[in-house]
Length: 337
Ligand SMILES: [Zn+2]
Ligand SMILES: [Zn+2]
Image (tube, rainbow, N blue to C red; front, side, top):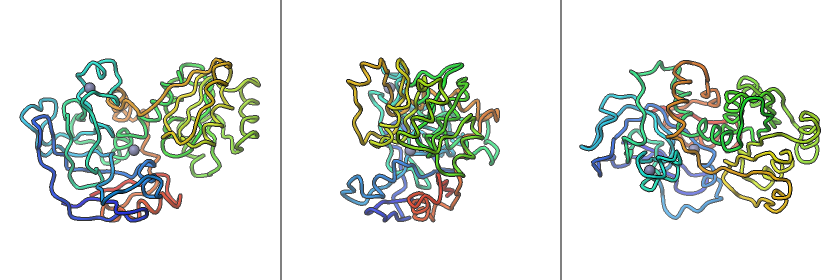
């Protein structure tokens, strides 16, 4: 089979790799129907994280189960399935609290931008759809593998509820998904911070009530104008850089909450936040906890998170999928084997 392998910054190749096989009785082998490139994959592509040796890459997928190990009971060959960017057993004490990203027996995959993948902990990771979904639903189902659940996690972590005022920092696929999550959770004011017209359009389609194009102090001032002069109840920080974190801290009101899902590349002024009674929560999304509800919303066509994909390519053109996202010609690239 073929799949993507990252050799060095800027060098992702479509290569022949060994077919994955069942190694544990709890494994499934899934033939991918769609995979995609993540903003977090770009950290290595841009040389910001080391690549000690050529490494299969990718962690978002949906597909058809091909084979299962002897202990797998929840899915069977032929099922259309989606799973999160981390696998989980869904049975350990931590999973039973809903903190699946921190499963005691969980972990990642060996490169999901591939024709076939091995999914450990299949019963606790994969969810099967009733029948094979319509083709136009595939992008939205694939979005549940990471970005939509990550945006949802930001909103849940920030305590978004009916009537909340929300600021979303970051207009990448996760930030846009955070806008959709905030609107779904009942926020009455959803402010998307974005300077790109195409991303602003997606944000509005997802339920943004206001767009703020300014950044820094000007951006904070605009947010305060929209929130009775005090800042937002909830801020979703979906980037992780120093600038984004400063923006988030400036936009939250006293007593509000910040939901963090951007991979952390900066510090937070914890002491300042203490005096302002600001809550901080976040981390990698508990995909398996959110997946059943969000899959229902997708299958009933209540939400359409697949709008974040604005480029679709054959898996064999994975190198171009990376280049387009790196050069910001695409928000997010979908790949079909
Ligand atoms: Zn991802
Ligand atoms: Zn677990």
